[in-house]
Image (cartoon, rainbow, N blue to C red; front, top):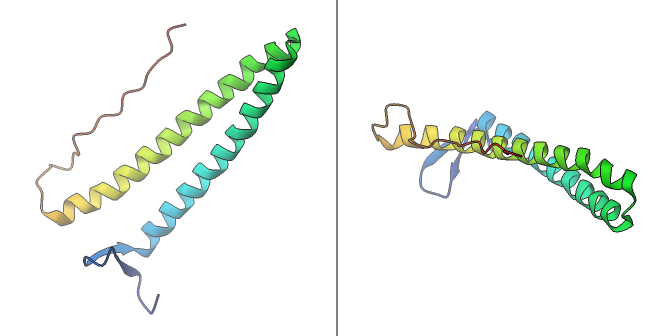
Length: 112
């Protein structure tokens, strides 16, 4: 980028703040790190399950909880990214949303 803090997105004239771009990039790096950790957790869960050793199966309970928490974190990161991206886009489009996007995240609670 030459001498500015903004750059064009999709060639349609919309400008994206340099700081916002780095915030998106940081969030995507966090998501990728969590997903990599999830891959390792899933591999360990599968290995423990294949052994059918009671201690290993018991350990899977904690690993599955950690996996579920990681998935929640990824969902939250993507939701925050979505809100960060669509908020400025709606404001620049002139739409009168009253600052609200009309999207509501629903958290599903496990009843077990």
